[in-house]
Amino acid sequence: MKIMPSDKKGLIESALGKKECDLAIENANILNLFTGEIYKGDVGIYDGFISHIRENIDRKIVEDRIKAKKYYDAKGKYLIPGLIDAHIHIESTMMTPTNFAEAVIPHVTTTVVTDPHEIANVCGIEGVKYMVDNSKDLPMRQFVLAPSCVPSVPGKENTGAEFKKEDIEELLKLERVIGLGEVMDFLGVINNDKRMVDILNLFEEKDLFIQGHAPYLSGRDLSAYMCAGPTTDHESRSSREARDKMRVGMYVDARDSSISKNVEDIVNGVKDFRYLDYLTLCTDDKEAADILENGHMNEVVVSAIKAGINSIDAIRSATLNIAREINIRNLGAIAPGYVADMLIVDSLETIKPEAVFFKGELVAENGKLKKDIEKKKFDIENINTVYINDICEDDFKIKAPIKNGMIKTNIIKYESLKSASTDFVVEELPVKDGYLDISHDSDLKYVIIINRHKGFETKGYGVVRDFGTNKGAIASTVSHDSHNLTITYDDPKNAFIVAKDLIETGGGISCAKDGKFIEHLELPIAGLLSKKPCKELAQEAEKMKEALRGLGLIDIKNPLLRIATLALIVIPKAKMSDLGMIDVLNQQIKSLFVE
Image (tube, rainbow, N blue to C red; front, top):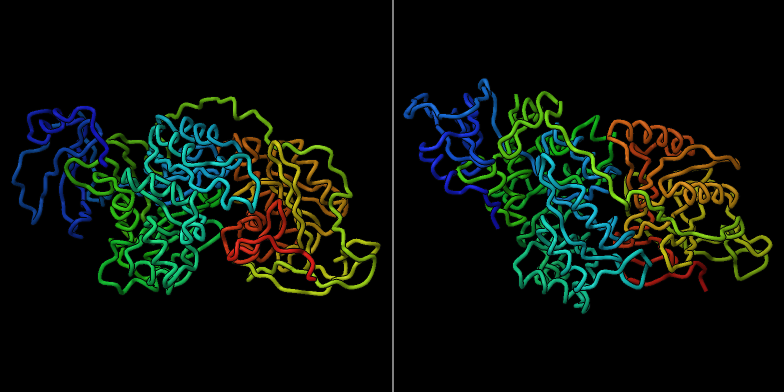
């Protein structure tokens, strides 16, 4: 697939010097990602595409100056391609696509590959259309993937929609939809589940990009997953895992998100490979304050460099490698016929932008946006999607099969405060007056997931250890990937307070302690997104983080999304849904009490 110019004839004539360029960037040190060279030269741009490069290798000028309507002096600084994010859910930034663009363009991200399965699980096809429409005519490129797993694992959670082959086929008609979103039901894939087979065959027949999700897969399971069609994975967490996947020709999207920092471990495993063509970089989930403080894809590139790979290889992993991964043949490099997405930076090691060009237009300079972005309004932004009725404090008590005494209980235990990985452990817990009692142990918390979508009244109950809080309740409608209402709590009274708060506000994150409401972060669009720009959202999120730290989440750098990981029933091994506790690897609902 190529991005096509609107005036190809004019582009060719511009390359020949017969037609004036729209812009020429002069006096640049150009990074050539095909050869790994850096050389002086000028770049001519016509109709948003590079038409010609006037090389000044060995300081020998062999051509006349490029004729252009405008000139930009790079002053000897580096000219590199615009950075691409290989895998992101824009919803996880809690910003609309428009506000997200305002935030990341000055941080040198010119293209993202986004999978809107978060909002799809709440609002179905209309949610995906909203993300496409909201990202139209922006001074950056937001490629969209058709969500593959809505819900993430059928039969193990109830969500606001269920996508079948026909629904996904309809999404392919939308503009900028270039492939299939992360195929999270990896067990369904390797076991030839009919739903997954039909969806994968649809995209293979059309020769479209298929994005993968393959945590911990190795050996025959990894081979089966590759044979099924997905070609990428952003869930690698270790050096060994990254090596195994790159060795079989899988693109490894090394991730540094606001939750998971995996780039260092992955780079340590693969940096001595002779070829790094299959190393790519992504953010996955990055929240507003993190973007403001640390940057976006430029931070991920710098992380890869610090981990030990050459700066040119790191930049290539965030540009040309990703363009090839998603089958876009004229993106991610500085060459004739390629899209004119480029950056001027002082250093290849720090990637601090002086200028950002998108389709040959200066859109940001010295960290400031230069292009106005129109703010559009959509009806979906004003719908309260938290459909929960007739809830009371008693709903948060966990009934036991005995009146009093001790009972063996399956408990979800976190691996660490830095990990979303969990396992089941069995503990004996007290029962008082017919209800499970955890008041003796501040490391234990009750968990409830209440379905918040139309047509469902399901509730799943569990107990979690080492979640991180020592008191109070946290509630969130940001609960990957079902985005049902998830609450961890020490006392039913606190749980009831935060549940009522989010039902009334239309979703977000809320916390309470000692029977009193403390703070909330309102996310009224689908219970996932704020209407506010990045800076305002970041300030509100910081207040929420401080409140969460007050509940004990002090050892987690970003406590905001800790609760979202509890409902991730595609990440091993023990998670929660509105149907109860889920044994992820066996795809089974697990009883709370041990018989």
